[in-house]
Image (cartoon, rainbow, N blue to C red; front, top):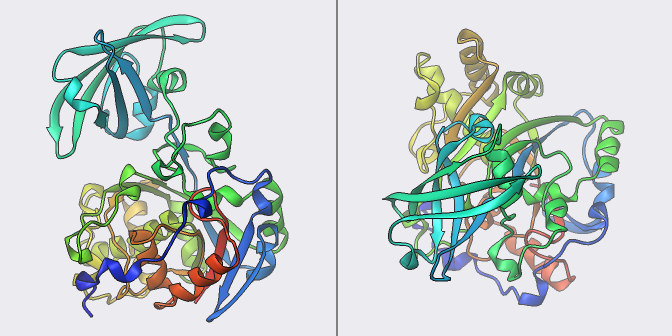
Amino acid sequence: MDTKHIHISDYDYPLPQERIAKFPIQERDHSRLLVYEHGNVSEDVFYNLPSHLPSKALMVFNNTKVIQARIHFRKDTGALIEVFLLEPAFPADYERMFQTTGHCSWLCLVGNLKKWKEGVLSRTISVRKQAVTLTVAKRDACGTSHRVDFEWDGDNVTFADILDAAGELPIPPYLNRKTEESDKTTYQTVYSKIKGSVAAPTAGLHFTENVLAALDAHGIEREELTLHVGAGTFRPVKSEEIGSHEMHTEYVSVRLETIERLIAHEGQAIAVGTTSVRTLESLYYMGLRLSANPGLTEGQLHIDQWEPYEVEATLSPVDALCAVRDYLVRNGLPSLHSSTRIIIAPGYEYKIVKMLVTNFHQPQSTLLLLVSAFVNGDWRKIYDYALAHDFRFLSYGDSSLLIP
């Protein structure tokens, strides 16, 4: 069947509310680990993950950091307005955005939009013991989002300071609870570094410094890349066929050294999480495009939703990665900065990812489609086992290691 004609209803399963983990277990690496290896299912504890992996393999992590993307304002009428940051508009670069002072603009979702038709909203916050006035003005609509202008006073107060003082961590909506102080720690990976996500790359939440040290001791090499997870990761597939579903854009950054390490490992990697998968597999198609058109700029390397299904994959993974490496070296770039809307579903042929560490995903979701494509359609065996053996599901739930 053509991938675009896949019926999302074929990727449904019963998920009772009580199986959704509302909070993580006390020790991250004591979560349960389902191991799917060549069609066989077994289970273990997450801290034993290294023993299931081949030594000298390359494991790739997403080092994005979740920002406190929800900011609330109250109008004079008493109406509560929520501004949810999606992606930077000006400055458009994430790193520059968080260091900017005085003013900036974001594309945002606006909660209680009908109560904020015009005018500015403001609130006073405390940043390093100084009172700072923060104001927002809503501009043009961009689909379901709006451009929102932020302005604030205060000496040397950056937008990162603003978010730390006024923002709230955006835990997933399916947890059906308010953000708690503990989420600021538990909803970040221990290796998170680069601010920009509005959702955590949750497969990484199980890792601890002890597990990372055990990976090193087992001879597993580690590399990091960055994909800033967007709110679209929670967007349900509402169309009957997935061909009508619009994927969201997510921004990626991969260092030259990471590309070189992937080449040294013959273009093969163990991905931690679906975000690492999306980045690594998008790299292949960026390399494919650069091989045919070496003069492209970073802005021309965006991977569209259906591109992998519409072009002929004529290069080996190593050759595609070499094209990306040569592009970076030729242009004196230390990192590749681009974006992707790739959808990975049954019919997709994986190029770089050979093993996957991931959590258990929502029914009828694009992430479940990605998993199904990875295990050659055998996802029901995995999920039936997890449901029958009381595994915990979704962001704060248990983990799995998938080896097709």
